[in-house]
Length: 85
Image (cartoon, rainbow, N blue to C red; front, side, top):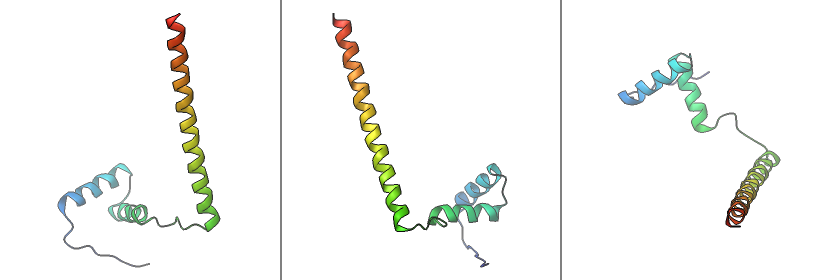
């Protein structure tokens, strides 16, 4: 495993890292590694079919949201029409 030394780390960034480490019950080193993993997307290497499936899922979710919005708009208009009677 490699070692990384960071020089001249801004105080605010250090304090935020310490805070997050305490919240997650991790050491400062463990938290730094977790944050770096999240930032660079380590472990998220995917095959082309996996990427395409993610895209399909996102499109499907977007379509469902549009459909739900349209349904909510229709319900509201029906309520409005019913109250007008």
